[in-house]
View (tube, rainbow, N blue to C red):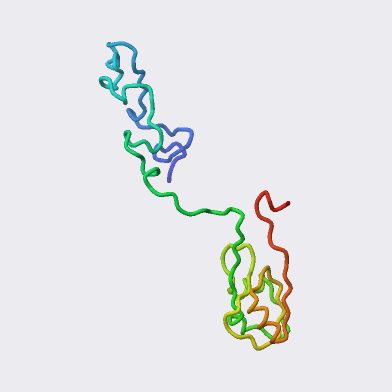
Length: 165
């Protein structure tokens, strides 16, 4: 039976660091008697003895790596990335079904982060389906209309500050 005053029970109000674990701040440059006077632990002369810091990526005067490597590529932050869906993947839907991004995500035909859905013409379609998508290729539109279906294009999502223009 443990007593409430038992020393082994940790009580937050009594928690202390072990003796010798916490040391005072070392005030350098306060005279020779402190043991940290004159050069204040920085040694003699040199870059590390001065008050300047090297900037990030500085390599001692050598041409830095980020300047030695070639500049390649371009990242357009206003680009629109569509999830590709081929008409051949749509065989599991019943004739007359209305298919949009939400249904394609439920069926796991579209996964991840995309700006919309684009229908592509790879494969065959043998039933009339109605699509509500962001984009469609010419061959996919032809195959869908030949099967008796239709495509309704919905507005592209707004991206970035120029989207409102």
